[in-house]
Image 1 (tube, one colour):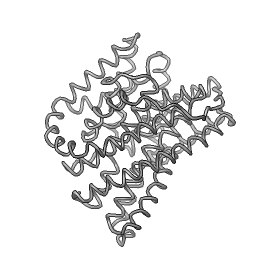
Image 2 (cartoon, rainbow, N blue to C red):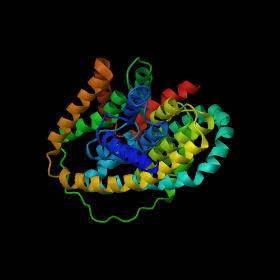
Image 3 (cartoon, rainbow, N blue to C red):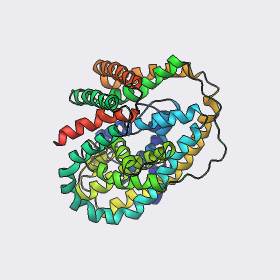
Image 4 (cartoon, rainbow, N blue to C red):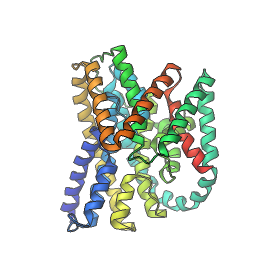
Length: 394
């Protein structure tokens, strides 16, 4: 049985690599396909093996999905904020370091997750009811702080409100994967068009050995914020990163560590919350619940073992792939690459979210460009998710 578990773990890593590197191909899609096939074509496969596959795929994805976000400006639903500091470092020849900062954050998150699983299980059921009551006011406080930290406070408020209204409209439409055109347009498409307009040239990337980053401060923010976002509806690692950065203010590089850590921690905590309170907050957790219905302690231990082993493999896989990308990125005409990437994103949105999704993508790109023109931190565009969640809870 151990051999079969290791085989499905490796297959999951391969699948997570594919979903991580190809924008628009999300683990939620693979999970949904597995669920639909589990009662037919995959009925002969033990459910425990499918759980190992899904867990390893999900964790690998949290490591590798920063590569297209930073190198190509194609954000996933959990990596939209990495486009901003990551692309800035890429233009300075530090794209490899940007990727590795997120990878160090993710690897540290694996260790933290294993260490705090037992106290988390004990604490989770108790705090669930309390968090439900205070979360909208907590998010309002975070939003106000984000705006007040800006020099151009009115402009920041306008950006937050504009993207928030857009988010409210989009998330209330009957649309397949509404976050794909919304976030791709606001954070990816707008940045790609700006790069095309400015004829951005990517310098030779530095891939020499980088210094071990200081991870204490960003990890503290991730550790406090991630549990809040892992078992509450509408909350993901993007919001966790915003909260974590306010709790433990850090610089641009520290923020990338925080993003990597929250991305992985939110995924890990979603499995724990599935075991403790039977709530699903990620597509991977939903798929596991559909396959096995009730998570036992033995299954949770197997998932944690899978996460631990996958995390180390995914770290070195990310390191090697980041080196390959870094060696080639400056040899490519980045303006042409941006045009091709934008075209691929348009086709992906059209294929997944249909014509309505394409309209939303165009509106989101235009909104993103308007927000960029106000010259405030683009983290204020997270209003597209924060405002809908605040109104939902209120």
